[in-house]
Length: 399
Image 1: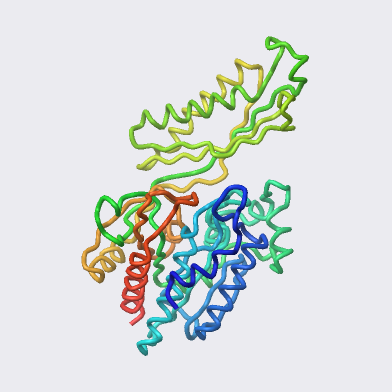
Image 2: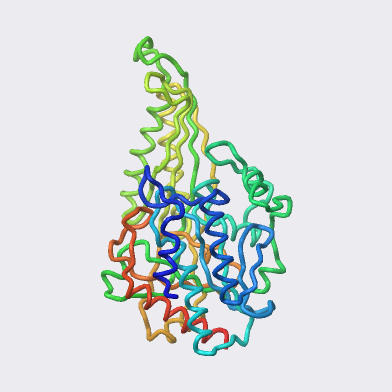
């Protein structure tokens, strides 16, 4: 079955009628349905499926062992996300396995398709959570205590999904089995449109992170409190949004986004007592992203002081610039006929694994250039091209 047909099987899962697109988050009903779908599809291909201690799913083709060739991606989404971000890499991997089996190929090395948990951080706030736990790049106790917007902890959600969160944490034995990792992903930008190519090989991931700004003020009555008597945390929060835009624009190539803001108590006729907002910041080059955040933080402190409010800033996640394994990158390019290289401003599980095992990425053209939104897309012909490219490199790497 083609990758496009497999994607079609997922179309009814996690539809977000309010936002448009899909909302599929770690261990929620939609994501659990997708997990069941993956298990059923992998078993149909004769793969052996297991869930690791951190909630990542592995479908092994043959016996497990060292120097394994691993491919895959994730099935969760951002709130109201598109159909391709994550699932394309999973369905393309399954389709590649099916096409290799159809031609009678058997891998000479251990081989697995992996689905990483909570890549987007859409529920618990930390991106690439499954791969971070696997590698030990996030503290397990910190991870267990992460809370979703309803106050449910990751540990509670994992337990409800049948996992044992007390076992969360670095898994050096499993990590040590990975010889090389290749992740296919829809492009999140318009590089391949401009290059006129259906696929590309990843080169780097821009340094990026998320920071929480918490402003404290005085809740009060919207009608009875004179303007001069207010300590309204919404004002410094608004200043941060504007400061982020100015500071990132001044760098020339930086990106800073406030996509989530939560006032408490949230009433229309109530001056907020607290406002939390989350800043996503990304700048090419090591050290430049923290410098951008420092500039925005200083603006936040000045605005809070002017309004008689408090502010605290906490880093929720940060990944420095990732350069994918040069030897693997060149091997992929040679195998695929010298396709173009692309940097990306988007984070991926391959970017987490790259610090521990040789990792690479393949991108499939997105004709809209839009991602993390319902308009995200890939043409069927390009999806098929991506599957053929992935199958080709997997066959080469596992021979």
